[in-house]
Length: 125
Length: 106
Image 1 (spheres, each protein chain N blue to C red):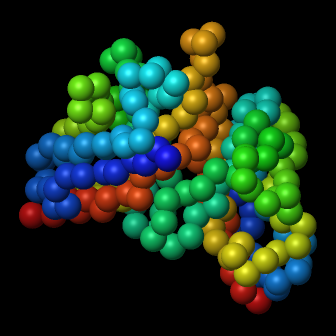
Image 2 (image 1 turned 45 degrees about the vertical axis):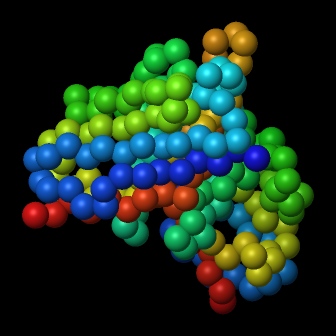
């Protein structure tokens, strides 16, 4: 049974870089069967997709966050990571990692059938 | 950007009620719409994809319909486990979510 687990600092200072890692267990990122995303949810608010990565390293980011986001993958550790630079209080949120299914055609589902439990990151001095 | 709206924002209902939630897109998204259920402190759970396809393991009392710009999620007979917040998500152009509809106890 595949599971996703987010990890990283729960507190980040304004203007610094938020760094999180998602560890995939019970399955291999290198299988190529899925795309791997980061999604966030500010307290009491809705969901915002941040970006995805494929095992090959191919990425795509939300245009509204693109200038500050980097997502990377480490297939040897079965992990993928998020870096969000120049954070402000508006970046305070629960950050989720999630997967969506890939197709041999090169397309993928774009809906998320498995999520991690989420981790709260607070931006504060 | 494709903007998503949902109505109502809050819905009060009783066990056994038929519940309908509406999601509208700012432009046509064909059938590229998913629905999720989220309970407090938990991650969202996929219910419906491609507007009307039921995710494996999801009870058949959940159904989705619509295409273009207007979509509905229907719960045919509300159960105690269904009190939660529901989100729609379009994936015609990357992924954006609606603001959510909270279903609470009447």
